[in-house]
Length: 263
Image (cartoon, rainbow, N blue to C red; front, side, top):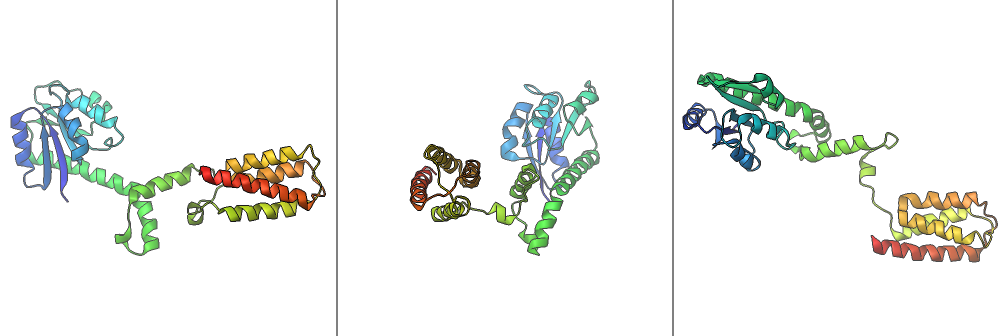
């Protein structure tokens, strides 16, 4: 597999050495002279690993490492700091800003290659561990590993399910559920009124019933029926005549039409 490697070092000698060392290792190499340039090309180049000198103009390797770690899009990229043999190096600070490893210049070719490969292997293993359960579930349903698609979306969906309250059972049916049509809503309302309202409403209660129905419609389908039924039950409605029922249905239909136009 070919990997992209970003080298940030202002030394022409180190740039040429790294280029020669990795020439036959299958890496796509991008070279910049300082940390600021490295940040500028980070998004467009999307490196799998970064090499950064601790002594650079404008922005050194420590600062570059800290900036990369603070960006959620790139925070997991492995970083190796390049340290001159006679340069003061604070290994504890390097770890604190997020460096994964360091190497002292001048270095042996195989030493650099080994450090790079170790970090890349570790990074790939972390990615596989993150998505493995999700991939397994998808393969089990599809029967073909080649059909596993869009893991990023599936990961977001998995987090969405976790965020829902425990009393909700999230399945394919729930996720695909659509709002009922106007006719279905009216039928639900008619059935509820027939079942729950059977007595006459006092004239002073009527405005409150209509107000409750209007509020429920505005809140959406999920909250409409409980509000109407609860208010109707609390008022202990009795002997609702057909003319009163017709008036309620007419008013609800008008409110539904207004609600649908606002969607």
